[in-house]
Length: 445
Image (cartoon, rainbow, N blue to C red; front, side, top):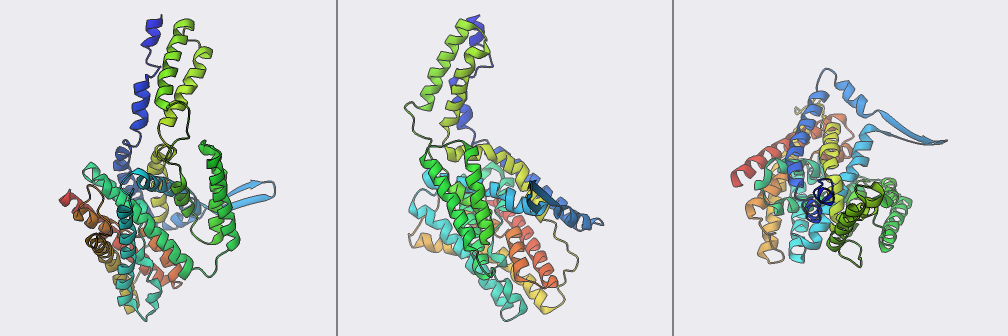
């Protein structure tokens, strides 16, 4: 009987538990390769839907109101808001956690490496803005100077995933870091140039949520569900402040601890000790659920503690984001109607040309020029495994502006005709940047 229990496949060995935990992050590459295809298919479905005979149902569906109520207290929002401002915060949480991990012990762990994405992102904002302004200075279209400054992280990462494992990991990290900084800059641009006023009460609410997160961390609280409430407070505070609430995900991801809480015994030692204790109990009592419940619980806890919180966040949410949040995001935002877009007048034509050239040429030009300047001046250095061809690939994929660019356009152009033209130009530029990026990546890698 004891030998039979020792061979039971239902009881994992310590080595199996360790390997299962340590390979969780490695499995992400397989998820992303497929999720990139799913993401692009969702975008294609949205585009066809929004330009089909039933195009009206697209807007109607995403504007469907959802209401959550408790007594007289009710909160209502549209499906589109739920996806863009709610679920996308989870995506940014995962991205923020990845950046936090890289800053701790990865490709951004020293000052020279961390400086590169910051400088490249600023170059990728300034050059497109200048190119756009050259075509639209002094016209009605000048208000859209910030439209081509943004990078759509979700689509850029999805397109990069289509290139598969041949792409060095450092390129993905650089793209993520650059895109995060890029979007933060875009959000600051919105707050400064496209927001009439900020609600400072909301800022106080957001800061109180962050203080609560820090307090929980100091108290050693490691259960993920405990941070749902303070995270929601941060999200609501940013929403009330007037900035994009998905920034809450980035902030919380960057605040995620990079090491597990200290214990008197290492998790691997706990696994070994508990495993032998479990075998002893099985030998004495057989397959009694009551006898093995406590050791099994300790095994699961020890397996969990092998990975630090910053990696557990990624492991726990990555597949949900890749196959749930990101495709929904594409489906809700890629449905740009081409009806009403006209390039016949000079203003509309200049807006179109300005956006396309700024995203397709300005983005990679600004990113590469800034990177070359910083490296040549020895202010920073390229991440390990990243060549100048890789920096060029990052620059091309950063030209996928999409959602944030469309959002800025909706703030910049009250005129429906110009707004429609701006959306069309963003869509065309993003598609062209993605195509050129894929070709460049295939040729270089």
